[in-house]
Amino acid sequence: MRIGIVVGSESDLPTMEPATELLREFDVPFELEVRSAHRSPKLVTEYAQSAEERGLTAIIAAAGCAAHLPGVIAAHTVLPVIGVPIDASPLEGIDALYSIVQMPSGVPVATVGINAAKNAALLAMQIAATDDPKLRQRLREYKEELATEVERKTRKYGFTSATGADDED
Image 1: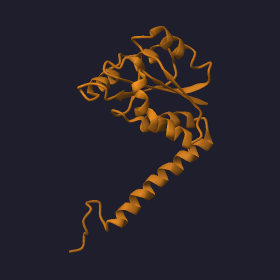
Image 2: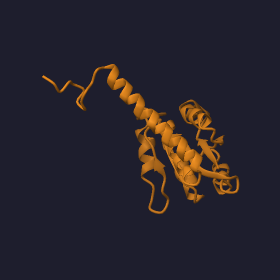
Image 3: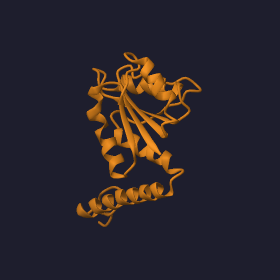
Image 4: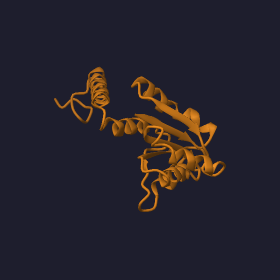
């Protein structure tokens, strides 16, 4: 099992740091490549077509503006592709979001929120966990930790109901 991360430009790398940090935290192997759907389309095609033989389980593809990278990769592989729209234009990532979610029938790309690299990594790990009971357990523990943190914050601020206000008058 290995996760592929592809960015359309070197300038996208900082946005993807939360994904790489989380994959490292979970000890999930990954590869990180810069490939442009517009400037190096042949490299993108080769990357996508060879992904299975390289042992990838899922591919995270991040791009801004026209954001064709996730769709081009999805067109050349049967592996799950997760698109991360990046805020890289005056439209603040909305253009990239629309580009990634509006894929034609038959070429699906799962899409997370704008700059949501961490969620992309979590989704890729959940896909990988379908065949990895240890990773599935670690993800359960992670979600339990999230719930515990919410409960801790609730107690810290003295909230006793879902509204955040004390129900007793």
